[in-house]
Image (cartoon, rainbow, N blue to C red; front, side, top):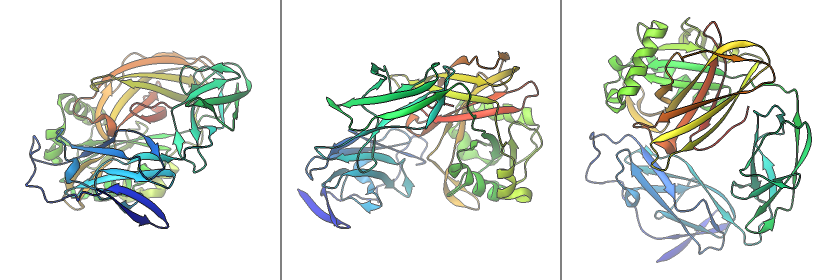
Length: 422
């Protein structure tokens, strides 16, 4: 039976069925519940109070626990795993089971006569053929809709991404469900542009490492700096000697990369934190938040764009990195796979969600043959990464470029299955 309840001053309708948080125990393959994956049958639905979106939750072994979870939409608890609404807008939905919180899923309730405008993730692009803007539609409530047909100066695009070598202003229009967007977008493409500087942080810690507490707080746990500042790109590696629980969740490839980390940096214990591949260890206790922020370069001469696609069986990612440069140099391009949403018990902090847990480096931890980069001539590098034990829904791709000295010129990251320009 459907029941309705008041959410602030609007009516939210859900199908009534109570959820339980007291199941008979964990039937996960390794006996440890450490992650949940939340998905939905649709990304948007009609804001008519009747149409409903249905959610599914699976644990880290693939077991369906949808009817045993507690769901919240915009911090308001739902009655079951469905959501309908008479109020248009974006609803951020999470599921909780046995204290573990799932990924956050955005679903959109839309008016029948919705008015849309074209938008993008950046105001301008570099007209070098490597950079691109991600296009989407926005309704009156600010909800993003990625579906649609986009047109550049009247010519239809094959995808919602726009890159060009033609400098100037370009008019972008769109169609959605047979209707033209009310407001077009004018986007500038320029031969010269500033590259955003970002910093790679590689950290070696462990769940049994009490000395790692401050490092974990700053980089991975709760409201960590690496979660908030897009200029900081973290790869968090768990040390075998201090993380027996995580070591069981690493596949053989991840274990090889942990050993490669220790060999490359000459790490002798945890915590071990390194910035932009500089082998001088960074001390969170000594330098803290301000020291980390001040280490970010003020400008960059290298930029990275990433496009990727997940295989149908969700076991592999095909990644294309496009590297733009303002200088001539020889450098290596390295891709990494990291995973969020993994809950592990830390000796001092208790059960916490770890951020950007390392799963793989490709083609290797140090990279392989160097590539010659020249100004104004973007280079395209392709990788194939195996997902291994990582959950694609919670995974991110990291790509960075090192120079002749082995130091990082710049780094970029993007969620698996999505793309990003410079």
